[in-house]
Structures are given as C-alpha cells and as structure tokens.
Amino acid sequence: MSEPALSTTPLPPLGKPGGSRELMRLALPLVFSSSFLTIQLTADRMFLSESGTDALNAVLSGAMVFWTCYILLQTTANFATTFVAQYIGAGQPERVGPVIRQSMIFSVGGGLLLLILLYSGAETFAGWMGHS
Image 1 (spheres, rainbow, N blue to C red):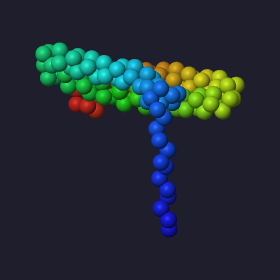
Image 2 (cartoon, rainbow, N blue to C red):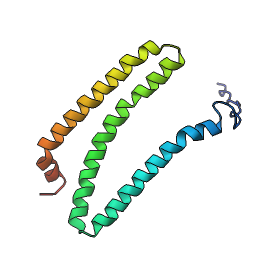
Image 3 (cartoon, helix red, strand yellow):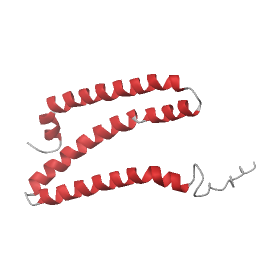
C-alpha cells in the first residue's frame, strides 16, 4: 500500500485574503474574550476562598454542573455556524434562515428545559454532590 501524499500547499501570505493577518483579526477577540472569562472566574474564586472552604466547595460544584449543561447546549447550537458558512459559501443564502431558526428554537427550548430541571432538582443535585 502506498502512503498518501502530504500536501505541500504553502500558507497564504500575511497581506492576502485568508492569510495569517486576517486569521488573527478574526481570532484575537475570541481569544481575549475567553482569557478574560478565565481571569474573572479565577478572581471570583480567590475572593470567595476568604469566606471558607464550604462556600468555595458549593460554588465550584454548582459551577461544574452549570458549565457542563451550558457547554453542551452552546456547542450543539454552534453547529449552526458550520451550516451557515457552508450555505453562504455555496451561494445558497436562502437556506441560512431555517438553520438559524432551528438553532434558536433549540437554544431557547434547551435553556428553558435546563432552567426547569435545575430549579426543580436543586436539592437533589446538591445531595448528589454531598451538600445539604
């Protein structure tokens, strides 16, 4: 069996469309946004640690449950960006609307369901994590 040939296509130059400069222009705001969220969470936990370990444990457990549910909904809804980019790139903008509508219905419905489940099951979730 022969080995597949490796692509030797060079990266686009800095000043051209699709180049490194354009990538950085699009990516840096997202990188900074994620970095500031991490800094904010770290600072919050540092201040909360002064209240005691019980408070810190409760917040960390609650944050893990929230983040798990949140990221599941967010990443599933973000699949819409793939289809929107594909349809716009293929010159089919009429197909973008249904994708956005389905993503929004999923996001709102999933968020409301998550809110109901977490609100009604808060004591159960806390018991599973060893809190009263």
